[in-house]
Image 1 (cartoon, rainbow, N blue to C red):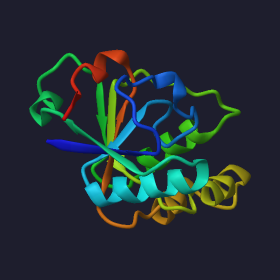
Image 2: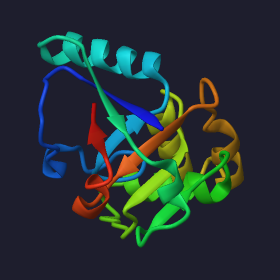
Image 3: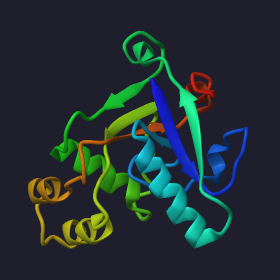
Length: 156
């Protein structure tokens, strides 16, 4: 399967320590299977931080998701478990970490920080949070969070 990463700086070696710690699935390397989504992210990053929009392409053997020694977590749709996982990863106070090599799941919408704040203050239940964390299209993000998982990505 072809996966894409939108960036404003080209690189050949993925450095997990350069990733933000408090993203949906934690600190790691994020990709999508939708090229236009990666292009939008690359354009946004270059507007904010300079540089030029760059779309890196990677090949990943999807059959490895079923038959490897990788620890994989997959969310097929938004759910309370998905919302709780995002909440824990994005919450800097909780200092939550997980040991998954790869996490795959829907991308939360742009209002996710606001909704997570409402959940944290108690004005939303976890079920309400899950329902409100809608995504723009049925598009997944692919999180590679360990050096072990990165070995399965081949840049093309």
